[in-house]
Length: 151
Image 1 (cartoon, one colour):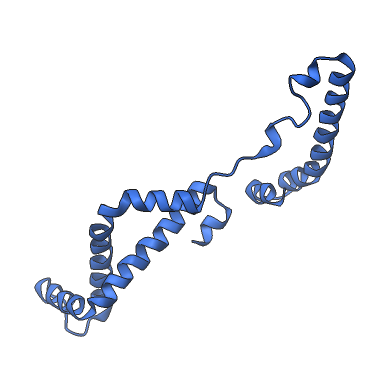
Image 2: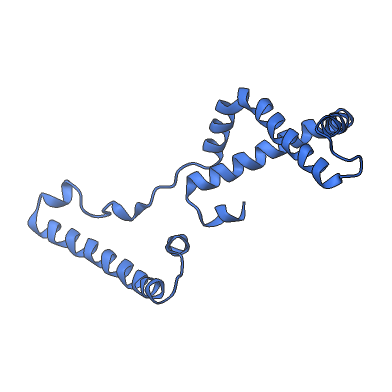
């Protein structure tokens, strides 16, 4: 989950899906806790674990939790994908689209020159804002992803 803080949208969606998966499995397991404990004890005795070997019983419980979680969630994969996609839509970076250059601005030479001048001004302001951050990236190991979030 913490690793998703600096990831792209797909990484954040994956982290959210993982949390939703664990919450759903956790709710089912809390409702069926007595049956699950009985299943863990039965599996532990079948594979020869000591009655007081709680570390390995915890590993058995965790394995059952993960397998049962997958079995529970597989029928709902499409709904889960739709949910996380709606909650976290893809963000577009608007820097790539010109603000003043368009078909109507190019009809007259004076208008076209002014539109190019305005676009160049925006480009220079952006460049001057980015340049110190790029230099920090070069000098240190600062993450470029964190820089984009500041813009």
